[in-house]
Image 1 (cartoon, helix red, strand yellow):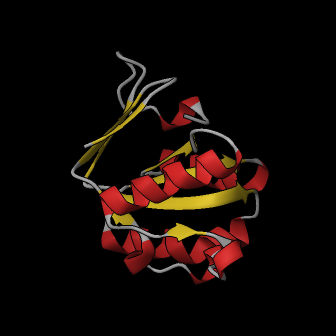
Image 2 (tube, helix red, strand yellow; image 1 turned 90 degrees about the horizontal axis):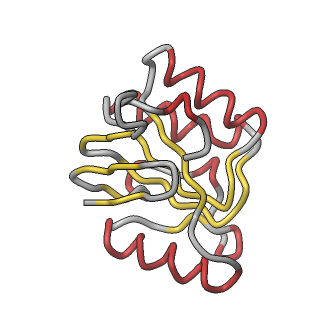
Length: 135
């Protein structure tokens, strides 16, 4: 995980998300503005959100932490596995398994225009410091 503030099980140092939406992005997310529409949609749906991206940093990470701590929307962010083309292939595999879409500017998809239909879903996600398990 990208911030210890996402931890929901302090006794094990893990994060557990029940029935989360999963946002897959093949880019670094650092701007809150581009993330806001999808965050608002997820908050309205009342489900948690797992973000798997190249990285989430700066203002965007701070916004996610604040929203999680205030209980507005439960979010966890992790770095996508692998590098380069391997990372893109792994994100695509995760998208296939979760019925989601990889948000990639290469194919004309922008984070600002992402809807709930673009997000993957899972029954449960368990995240430790170095592992993410999607069930």
